[in-house]
Image 1 (tube, rainbow, N blue to C red):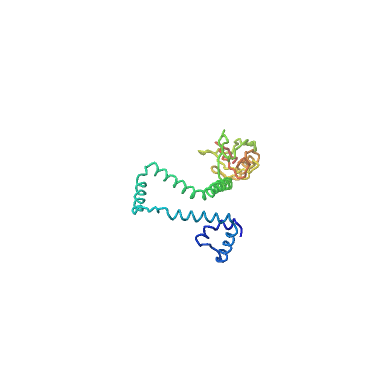
Image 2 (image 1 turned 90 degrees about the horizontal axis):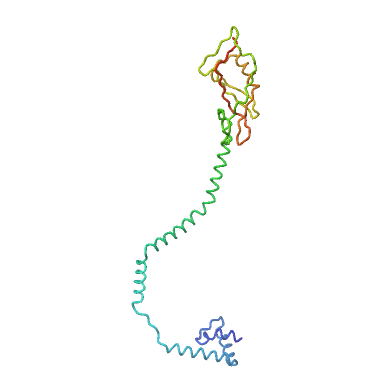
Length: 240
C-alpha cells in the first residue's frame, strides 16, 4: 500500500471507521505499512494529538432560546422591508413572468400578422378587377389600384347630324354608358344605363367604342382586364 493511500485514510484508521468491502484486510495492510514507514507513523501521531486536544476543549452549547430568537429576527426583517424594495421585487417577478409567457408566442404572432397582410393583398387583387369604378379627371395615382379611363373617343360614325326624320334624345342625363375595358385598353362590352336601346343606336355605339382608346385598369402597376368607364352624352340624335 502506498503512502498517499495510507495518509488519506489515517483519520478513518484512527477512529476505526475504515470503509471497505474487506475492512479487516485493509486495516491489516495499513498496520503493516505503518510499521515499516516512519513518515506515516509521525502523521498518525499528529492525528492522535489533535484528537486529544479536541476532546479537552469545552463544547459550545447554543442557548436554549436560539431557535426562538432566529424566528423573531426573521419576522422583524420581513416587516421592516421598505416599499421601494417590495416594489422592485414585484417588478422583477413581473418581468420574469412576462418574459417567460410572452416570448414563446412572439414569433407565432409576428408570423400571423405577416400572413394576414399577404392574404389581404391577395384577396384584394382577386376581387378588385370585378369592381365597378369611374375614372376621375386629373386624378393623381396614389393607390395600388387605378381605374380605367377614357383617352380618346372615336368620331366614327362621322354623321351624327339630324336629318328630316331624326329625333333628339332629351333626358336628364342624356345617354349613359358603362363600358368594360380589357387589359389592352380595348372595349370588350358595354351596357346602356340610361337612354334608348334601339338597334340603330347600338350599331352606332359599337362602331364608335370599337375605335376609341382607353387606359386599362391597373392593379399593382399591371394592366388588368375588367375595368369600367362611365360615359355620359348630353344630347344624341338618333336617325329615325
